[in-house]
Image (cartoon, rainbow, N blue to C red; front, side):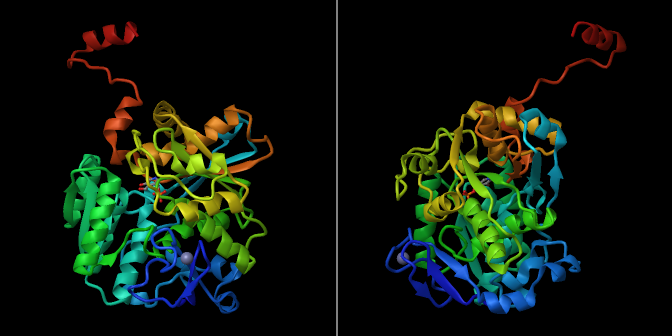
Length: 412
Ligand SMILES: Cc1ncc(COP(=O)(O)O)c(C=O)c1O
Ligand SMILES: [Zn+2]
């Protein structure tokens, strides 16, 4: 198991020794999120493409030699990662691209990509001897943290906006978390969680604060590369809220590139809802920093006006030659049944937003026909059935009478 060699600020490059108390850069404050960097020469001896091909661990922990967890016994006993990557010929041909791959991360144990981060967060809490872990979340990081805390014997405190979908809040309660429904939006839940964590000395699982969490999310990129036999796609589309998932994708590809497992990094494209698009605004205006703004979208998981990991999000897009795009709520909603009916993957609104962005860019002629694309579906559709129902037709209502049923069928 690898020990991280150093933590390095993404903004100013200042370096820090890892410790339980070290979250962000002293010079840059909350904006200065930290990268976890490894001794690559040493790592190359422990993990190779060959060692991976004979590795029978079909979870994200197959990459443990380039992950920050110190002790194997601290890895939660809940299988996460190695989610399917579907080669979708139907959608590739419909939208005129060479290949379209759909990565279904809603297949994780609590049904979102966030499980990759929570698994690492809980393992790090145990590495550091912590007993209580806490976070603020739009919902999925919360349900995920509560599940992983439950199997690892940690107590969890979770702050969610009171409007979080019922399914996500129910998950939290079932797993036994201490749930705080904050009368406010995600930004307010985040601020309350930050103050409470400081005051009570809990371990902070907030992905934009704790440098180790993105190390879990990076395994999504590593899986895409390995599942494609190390021939990475030209572009990867993913939805963006706080910016941790997209930051994780970049880190995963960047680590693989440094290890020499892949020969290039895909263009990473971040997709935001029109009503919550600060990262898109910064990319389209060429701004160095992100200006926080309003957040109003049906895609609750990305209803984020103040993206805390903006620096990693901008780096992911700019360093890879990718871009950012926005989609309307209507485009998000119509993507739910389209993706489900053509790939079998049922995503929640933020889960299908990456696909909605891909669709919009191809329709606008911004993707060429020889490109290979991957879209990451970040969360399962059962997380938010109220939105999903708005995107599909009504059921046929009928008494248990074959004559009435026949009339109904005939009149359609
Ligand atoms: C399903 C889903 N998709 C996308 C995101 C966006 O991830 P991030 O906030 O890391 O940008 C989230 C975050 O909660 C999510 O739950
Ligand atoms: Zn800094």
